[in-house]
Length: 138
Image (cartoon, rainbow, N blue to C red; front, top):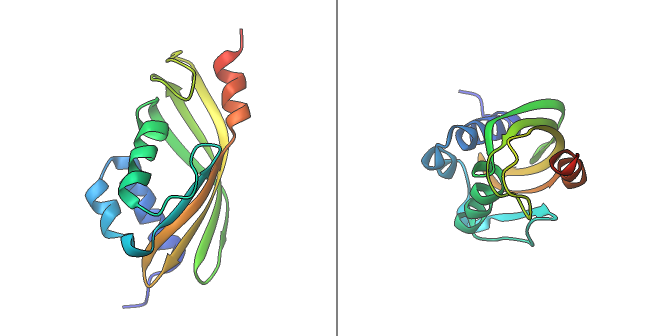
C-alpha cells in the first residue's frame, strides 16, 4: 500500500472534525508534537485537547449547517495549505456576537503540518472582518 499524502491525511482529519468524530480526529494527530494557532482567536497552543476546546467554542457551537468548500490547495512534502469558503448559520455566541440566525459565508485559510502520517498542527485564519460585517449588518 502506498504511503498516504499529506492532503489525504488532512482531508480525513478534517472530515472527522466536521462530523464530530473527535476520536477519529485524535487518531490522526501527533499529540506529543502538536502546535496550533488560529490567528485572532488563540495564541500558540501545544495541547490538542485545549485546541479542540477552542475549535468547539469557535467553529461548532456558534454555527449550524456548517459546510466547507476547498477553493485552492497547495500540497508539500510535510504540509498542506487550503484556502476555503465556509457557509453556516449563526446559532450561538461567536466572540461578542450572540446568535443572529443569519446565514454567513466567509473565507479562511489553513496551513496544516503533517509528519509521519499524522497531523502535527495548523495555523489558521478566518476572515473575522467578513464575519463581523455579516453579523452586524442592518
